[in-house]
Amino acid sequence: MEKLKVGVLGATGMVGQRFLSLLENHEWFDVVCVAASPRSAGKTYEEAVGSRWKLDTPMPEKVKGLIVDNVNDVEKVSAKVDFVFSAVDMTKDEIKAIEEAYAKTETPVVSNNSAHRWTPDVPMVVPEINPEHLEVIKFQQQRLGTKKGFIAVKPNCSIQSYTPALHALKEFNPVRVVATTYQAISGAGKNFSDWPEMVGNIIPYIGGEEEKSEQEPLRIWGHIENGVIVKAEAPLITTQCIRVPVLNGHTAAVFVDFEKKPSKEEMIAKWKSFKGLPQELELPSAPKNFIQYLEEDNRPQVALDVDYERGMGVSLGRLREDSLFQYKFVGLSHNTLRGAAGGAVLIAELLVKQGRIEKK
Ligand SMILES: N[C@@H](CC=O)C(=O)O
Image (cartoon, rainbow, N blue to C red):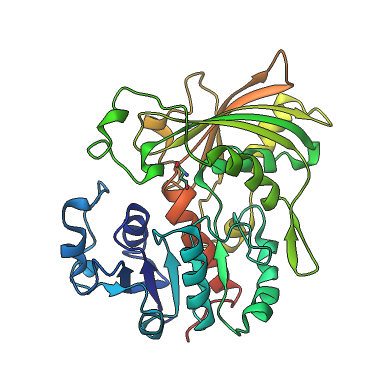
């Protein structure tokens, strides 16, 4: 198939950089446009980023010489591309407005931002968990007055270290969950050079994160009713989100009660055999095995397991009975791959496979 032309909005930030690196040799997508703030516009991508390239892999050769467009030139950017990934860094209201403006030019937007996560007719998707929410796009298009343009978003990175694990156990009906997340500094768009206070430190506060971590899984488990997503009412989830001195990888320590208590063996078997639509469709970025369970007492470890399945899989371990809850376990996922750009690329691949994104 001829590759689809892709633009990355907010291309100079850390998530934008991740998009470019993931898309460097993508089988279906070709980055033809990088857009960023007016400050960067008119420069080559290499000049605009300068020393702010934050990944440990080199800047892709192909994007170095691209001239950065002003992200606010919606018509100009839209004319170059079949769809865009959005990682723009603006206020919530500005993001809502600019993503809708792109959608209204008949340009699908797959967004990493939180601005539209609770817009009732915008699907927020983990492709292995709730691909059926993409059906809400037709109602969104009626509201926007578009035929091909729409917005789809991915959830917050923190929830990916425990939501897939709970989803694989849905038939046992999880009713109460406590999750404490230990979140890497790249989740804040930083590395250790630009956040030296994090060396050897822990900060017990991440603005807005606990609310997202408690509420977003419920929207993922919701259903479509009258053209909007209605969130699920259970399980009850409470979280504490803590910043830790790790570059990549969000870990969660999880306690859970079920309505029908499974055995430990049943839980591990469900995790190991869990498959979703991306695995069935063999999408290019889909992990072969979404969830791995590690038997060793000292796993999952960030240093050993964060890159499982090219950073697109979830690693679980330490499942045991608890004295207050039925069970406890630990989960780990890569926050800027599965939790950010990689999750968005997987959504885009599913949208292409479903014919919702195509050549203009
Ligand atoms: N809000 C998260 C980033 C996830 O998308 C964090 O700060 O780690």
